[in-house]
Length: 73
Image 1 (cartoon, one colour):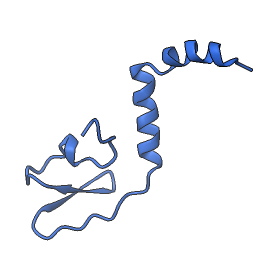
Image 2 (cartoon, rainbow, N blue to C red; image 1 turned 90 degrees about the vertical axis):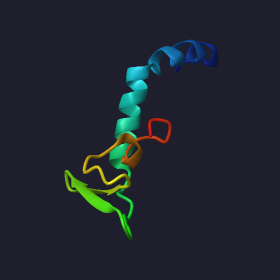
Image 3 (cartoon, rainbow, N blue to C red; image 1 turned 60 degrees about the vertical axis):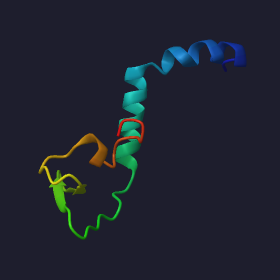
């Protein structure tokens, strides 16, 4: 079992940017799709998941992707 002092030294190394990205992706995949309802915007369906096309571009922009963490949107 790791002691607290060793854990404090090892944890920042383990949580590098690629690791954080993988963690964020796995969390996003485990989140159930929210209900997408719109009055005037289009709904995009990509890989069987629905997204609101807020800017009506026809493409999924990062800020429209509910799977991404808020900091990435």
